[in-house]
Length: 163
Ligand SMILES: [Zn+2]
Image (cartoon, rainbow, N blue to C red; front, side):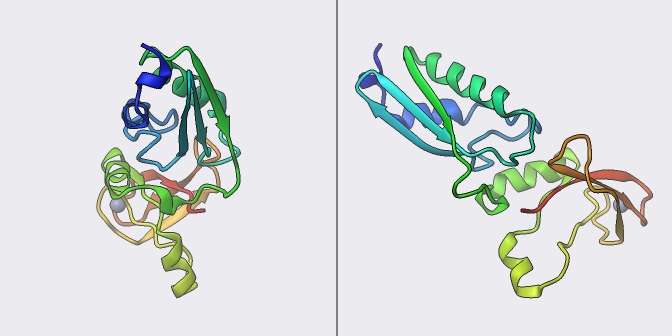
């Protein structure tokens, strides 16, 4: 099998099975990280935008993308990352938001809503749904998340940083 025999749809399909290294319940395509797939003769170029430039997982994502495409039998794979335009939480699909919530991470508020209301992002406790939450640290286990505690059920939880 050579790259020219593989459709970009097949590549997108393979990429949709690549988990986000930070949050394994969502894939990199659910997160809207994959920006472009180019098939040029025998060469496949995948362009992606990392969710947060501070995330240490950049090289992990690059490696996983390369592996997924090579798994289709493609020999030449180039994986490029781009920060322009920067990733926004609006690129996440509805599925990803729901899975984040089930995983116990408060999904980010859509950026558009914040612009209209000019309020701090409404963060809900993923366990009881209460809005009565407090941020306890700007950074959770990674730069991408924040730590909160819910004043209703007293449970700490991680929230996804809205960007
Ligand atoms: Zn709660």
